[in-house]
Image (tube, rainbow, N blue to C red):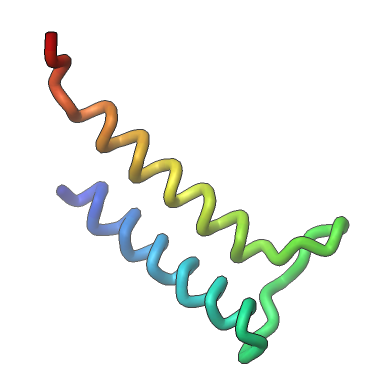
Length: 61
């Protein structure tokens, strides 16, 4: 439960930052290729949550 709390908190921060970057209200730091890092953060935390949920599901046979 603690995992989902902190991962969800960081994921929601990344979601807010990505939304604000997309709408133009703020500017996220960018990689050398020009992609905003908040987009990468959102992707990473989404994958972490989905992978953990998949890992916790019992195998149904």
